[in-house]
Length: 153
Image (tube, rainbow, N blue to C red; front, side):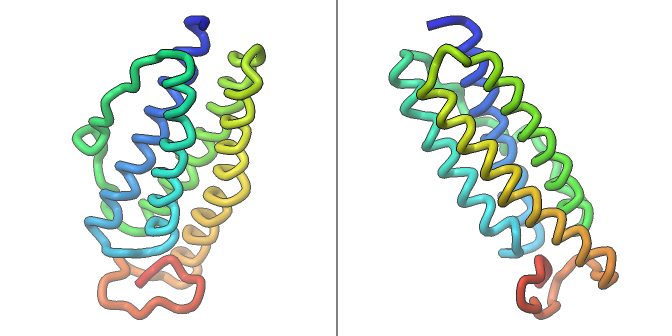
C-alpha cells in the first residue's frame, strides 16, 4: 500500500464526512427539506462504500468529528449555493484522487462511482434548489408548503 493511496482514501472519507455533517446541520436548522434530506442519506452510503477499502488496505478509518467543525448556512438559499460549491469541489477532488490511485482498480471503481453520484445526481439537485430559491424569492422555507420537486418546505 502506498502513502498516496492512504492519503487519497482519508481525503475522500473526510470529504464525505464533511458533506454529511453539513447537510445534517441544514436539516437540523431548517427541517426535512430537499435535496438535503435525500443527499444526506447518500452521504452515509458513500462512507459505507469507502470503508471496505480501508479494511482491505489496513488503513485506520479517521474519526468523524465534522459535526463540530462546520457552520450551518444562514438560510436555505445559502445552503443550496453551498451545496453547489461543495459538489463541484467534490467532483474535482475525485478527479485528483483517481489520478493518484491509478494502480488500484478497486479503489478507482469506488471513487468513480462516488464522483458520478456527485456530478450527475447531487450537483443538479443543488443547482435546481438554487434556481428555485432565486426565481421564487423564497425566504427561509419555514412554514411553507413544498411544491412538487421543490427544495423548500
